[in-house]
Amino acid sequence: MKSKFFVLWFMGLIGAAAVLPYAFTLQRDIISKTGQPLAVIVLASIAQTAVLLAVAAFFGLKLATSLNLPVLAIFNQTEQTKEKLPGFFRLTISAGIITAILITLGDKIFGRYLPQLAVANSQVAIWKTLIAALYGGIVEEILMRLLVMSLFAWIIAKIFKSAEPVKNNLLMWSAIIISSVLFGLGHLPITASLTAITPLVVARAIVLNGIGGLVFGWLYWKKGLEYGMLTHFTADIFLLAILPALLK
Image (tube, rainbow, N blue to C red; front, side, top):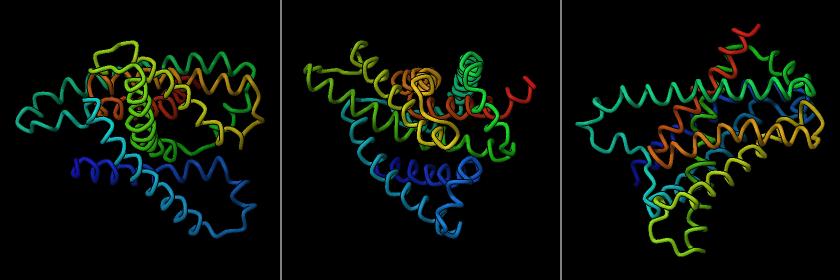
C-alpha cells in the first residue's frame, strides 16, 4: 500500500502543476484582483493540492482495500503486465474517445443556451489544454473515484451490511452515481468565473461531467483505478483539443 500511495501522490502533484496554466488563463481576472505575485499563488495552489492528495490517496487506498476495489492492479503481477498492456490501452483509449463524443454532443445541446462557455474555452492555448488533461486523469480520479466513490460504497455497504460490496450491483452503481453528481458539482467554481450560476448551468455540469463519472466509476469498479485514469485523460484530450479542432 505504501508504494501505491507514493505513486499516486507523486502523479497527483504532476497533474496539479499541469493544470495551472489552463486554470490561470480562465481565471486571470480573478487572479489579477488578488494582488498576489503569481509565484505565491502557484506555490500555495500546489501545496494545498499536495495535502489534499495525500489525504485522498491514504484514505482512498484504505477504503479500496477494505472493499476489494482494484487500484493499479495491472501492475501487481509484473510478469503479466506486458501481456495486459495492449488490452489496457485499447479499452481505455476507445472508452475515452466514446465518452468525449457523448459529452461533446451533450455540450452542443447546452451550448445553444450557454454560448459564453464555449467562447471562453476556445480562448485557451492548445498546449495548456493538452497538459491540463493530466489533472483530470490523475487528480480528479484520485479525489472522486478512489476517495469519494470508495467512501460512499463503504458507507452504503455498512448501512446494508453487505459482505461483498463489489459484487452488489445496486450498491456500487449507487456509489458511482453519487460520486458522479458530486463530480459535476465540483466543476461549478471554475464555471462561476465564466458565467453566472443558474439551474441550467448546474444541470449542464451534472449531466456532462456525470457522463464521464459513470464511465470512469464503472471502469474503476470492474477493472481498476488506472483504467479510469487513462480513460479520463483520453477523454479530456479529445474534449479539450482534438474534437474542437475537428469541429471548427
